[in-house]
Amino acid sequence: MRTLRIVFGICLDVAIFGFLVPGATLLAGARLDAAFFPSIRLDGPFYDLLGAAFILAGLAWLFWASWLLIEEGRGYLTELFGIQVSPVTQRLVTRGPFGVHRHPICVGYLAALSGLSLIPGLFGSLALAIPLLLVLTWVYLRAFEEPGLIRRFGAGYRLYAGRVPMFLPAGRPRIRVALRNLQADRLRFSLSVLGVAFAILLICFQLSILKGARGQITTYIDHTGADLWAMQKGVDDFIAFSAVPRKAADDLARLEGVERAVGIYAVYTLLEINRVKSRVYVIGYDTRSGDGGPWKLGPALPHLKNARQLEENEVLLDENLARRHGLGLGDEVSLFGRTFKLAGFTLETTSIGSQYVFLPRDTVGEILPGGGLSFTHILLWKTKAVSDEALIRRVETDFRLNCLTRARFGDNTRGFLGMFMLPLLTAGMLMGFLVGCITIGITLYTSVLERFKEYGTMKALGATGPYLYGLLLKQALISLGVGAALGFVLAMAANRFINEWVPGMTAGLDGAIALETMAAGLAMVGLSTALPMWRLIKIDPMEAFRA
Image (tube, rainbow, N blue to C red; front, side, top):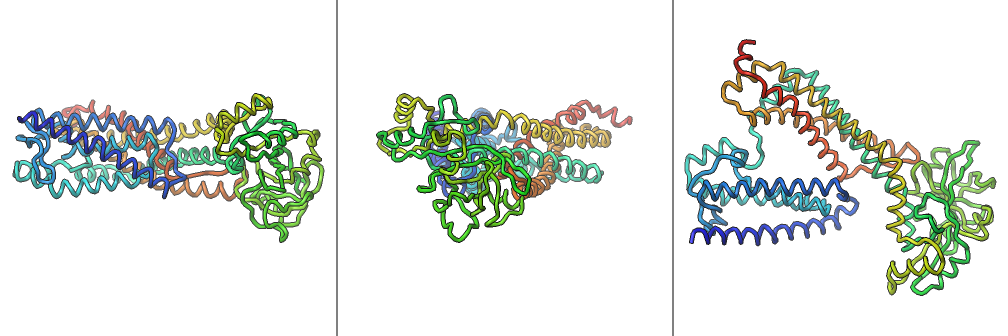
């Protein structure tokens, strides 16, 4: 009967905590992301690996604690809202995970739940749903679980609760010792904090630049709204030059399943302003429909209410480019050897190393050699009656063009960017990571050497390896916390400077990047404590006393 009650309790746990709670958490996270965090994306192999690590570590911790309750405690659950579902534990378990915190099953479960939220990239679960679940767990344990344990084990549990924390494996005495060790040499602590801040700044800034660059390079593709892009055979990104017969646009517009087809020109060239040349990406768009044109206009001449009213001798310039050259509305600029009047400014049209410039399609066709015979790309809007795959096959077979969905076209363009930028940005992030590891490691190692006798005395009085490692870990975490706060402030300032004053660059700092940076910071802490801990393990108490 006892075994059956334990099995029943486990089945009830699996039903509630294996399916109901995770399902509700993931659903809440998805809805929170859609409502409040649509721009924060936690996708990629980094989050998958981190999520898997959290799940494995959390489940291992949870199962270890559950096994100890059954094997040593001779029971399973205590009570569920005061109702004994399974046989309660007969002995107080204090070793293993229970020596780290009083409720390791809850800690392991929340860690696994966090990993489960990381894999699909649900920021809302991590930011709101799981913290709320933690608060509710704390309330339940205080109101029901711990009073029952006190009634059962009396003074033994009170002593245990006074010695072992509920959740965090951090005792206040060790925090005081860690702070005292760090404050003993304030100059060294300050240098450590500055080193960590510099590391956090480098990692966070490089990630922000990468995010901004990925968004920049496909900003035009993302904003056109076209479902499909048709281009020359062999071209599959927005960097390479393409030539498509103008007649193909009319033929594609009559194709079954196509709502409309619009040809555009997209050409890199030099814009001359006051004898200064700047690299720009000229877009020749259809001024009759506005398709392929700018999606957000800033200040403009009175007659220019929208992008469809641009005249053949007028040009639209990116606002940042115009500001950098001191241009105003009505000024003249030179493109393709012709002079154009600046009729308005465009917003959010900065790409990597250049800005977008918009001209009427017919004007560009007259200027470019062969422009009267071909476009560079054709934008397709399709009806709901046809699938992307079917229409792509038809375009590629009948018209001998390469045809891609907007998402695929954007991915290819970002992939081209990654070949050049990722090695540089990765090298910068690696340098920041190594700086942080070395800074924290040297600070802790010199602290161990200076307090050689003190650590030897602690070992002689019975301080265990985990206790001493916890002491080092707290010193490292304090340095990381103070340094990270300063580093994030510097990173935000650097992002603002880049966005406002550096042409052709955008930095996109958000919550996802902050999480990635802090994960890298925690990894720095883990690596930097290895050498000081090795030195601590080798300390002989007798040798310390002789010294």
